[in-house]
Length: 202
Image 1 (cartoon, one colour):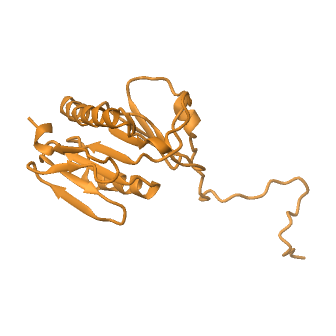
Image 2: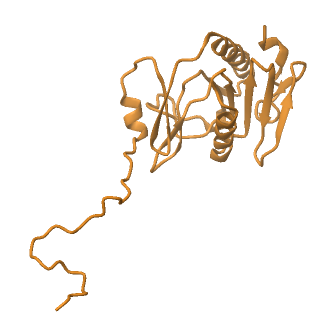
C-alpha cells in the first residue's frame, strides 16, 4: 500500500535532497574581515559578501588626500569632530554584515565612538567623500552613494577628477551636480566648510 505520510519507508534512510536546491552562500562577518591579512588589496563587505578592489591610482589618491586634508584642517580648527582617511571601515549593517570604506569621512563630535575602540566603527559617518576612479562604473558609484544615505549618512560628495565635476547627494534622492567652478559646501553637516572644486584638479 502506498504511504502518503511523507515518512521514509526504510528505517535510517537518508531523505532525498534535490540537486537543484539553492545553496546558501558563505557569509563573512565584520570581525572576519578585520582579521584578514594585509596584502595591499582594498576590501569591503556588502551583506556578508567580500568585495576585493585594486589599490587606488595616483590621481585618485592625490584628489582624495587634498579633500581629506582640507576637511581635517577645518574640523580641527572648529572642533567639530573627527575626520577619517581612506579605507577606514564603518559597519553599516549586521546579519549579514556590511562594512564600507569611503575615501574620506567625517563624524560629528557628539557621535564619535569611544576613544580606543578597536575594530570598525559601528556607525554611519555624517559626511562621506568618494573619489571616482577611471575603472568605476557610474551605476556602481551611484549605488554606493545611495547605500551610504540609506545607512544614515547626511551628505555624500562624489568627486570625479576625469569629468572635473562633483555630485552632491542628499537624503531623499536630491542630487546636485557641481561643475569645476562650483564650491563644495559643508552645509549644516560641516558648518563653515567651503572648498572650490577647481582647486582639486590639475
